[in-house]
Image (tube, rainbow, N blue to C red; front, side, top):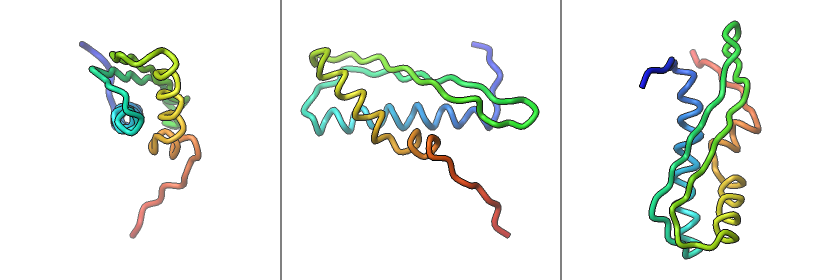
Length: 97
């Protein structure tokens, strides 16, 4: 695999990792079995300012849960996943002296 990767891309990785973790946590709380999960994330940055142009993530579930249960799980995780919520809300980041 060959790809450009910068520290800014860790933002995408953080969002995907959080969603992955929360899928397993929420599935367990709902009594759903997940045999496997794949979360992918992509997005871009304005190369002049390094402002994110947005993050898109996708989820693939390997589960015996019904389609309705899977849809509910994914919707629940989209609401509760902490890092995507924090990114959506925005926050100042400041250096401390």
